[in-house]
Length: 106
Image (cartoon, rainbow, N blue to C red; front, side, top):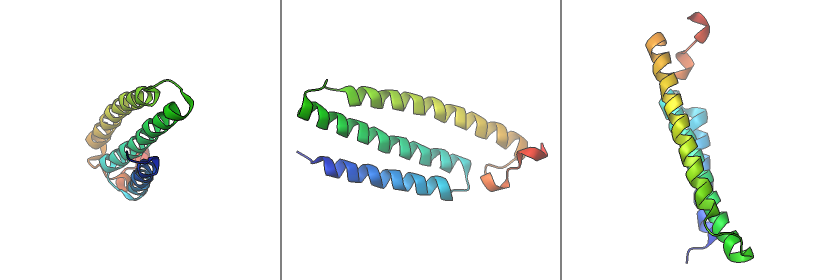
């Protein structure tokens, strides 16, 4: 049995890597990947706390897994929208580097 603290540490590390990547990346696709890491860290927390609460208080089993599936579905839809926006910006600005994009010049 793996203790909850290991899952929480893993989640914190993933979240920190995601925030660091989102703040330091210049590439728009790299920023989207960092946001996905942040959402995966939240999914690990949901599943971990769901398991902890279901064994401690007798709450319904699998609620965290269901919420994690919803987060994954929403993240997939957000990734598609984000990639479409990146492609549209690339067609007009000819770059995916965030610091070179100036939307007011279009």
